[in-house]
Amino acid sequence: QNVLAQMQQLLGRSETLRELLQQELGDWQERQRRSCLGAPTNTHLRPLETWFTKLGQGLFQLQKLLRALSELRMKVTYERDPLEAETPLLQQRLQEQLTYLLKSAFVVEQQPNTPNPCKRPLVLRTGSKFSARARLLVRLHDRNHRMEAKIHIDRDPPKIKGFRKFNILTSSSKTLLAGDSPQEGLVCDFQYLTLKEQKDSRAGKGSKGSSEGPLVVTEELHLITFTLAYAYCGLELELETTTLPFVIISNNNQFSSAWASILWFNMLSSDPK
Image (cartoon, rainbow, N blue to C red):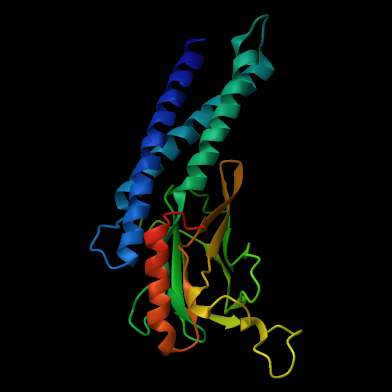
């Protein structure tokens, strides 16, 4: 009974800590957004990664203890055994905390960025290479399990006439592995990616194809989504994180208008979706 009571207290404290980490993560995301717009801010993730990892370690230790208690309950039990009534509830509560922590810990560390034309993020050009990177802040994984990360562009596109669709050329998936150095962390680093517009096969000869419509090219906002098949200590989750909205141009003359769209959107909205 004392062990169960202490576990209840630990779960309560971990919930409080998780809420504090969520606030810190929200502040970091705001700093990252401002940094993309040119503000001189600190976007280092090392402190957050340390805190998220420590909390994750504690929760997974509680998971091991709960499993041991469950095995004990299967071997020895008695009337009004507190393990029989409280263990399943604790397991459910712990599962919810681990799920919430891991899903919030998967973040976009580097927004879509191409070195041309002016080395600004969030404005990409078709045919030009760009990169993007996601990081899992809970630095816990099974080295014997291959975790696959994938990227997708516009998984849920707006239903707007003329909204262009794109394919990501080169590899859109890779295996996430920790670096040899513990400082490197768990990173999905996609480099040398290229975008190619999908042509509308229904467009008639001489028409503008999929670009035709009321929406100006430089006003279209696109999103890249990272997904990660995470597995550790018997827990399997599909993690997902999304970039800030970005604009896709086809020539350098469109850059100024595209950058104006990025600035205008970020002035009016703090919701990336």
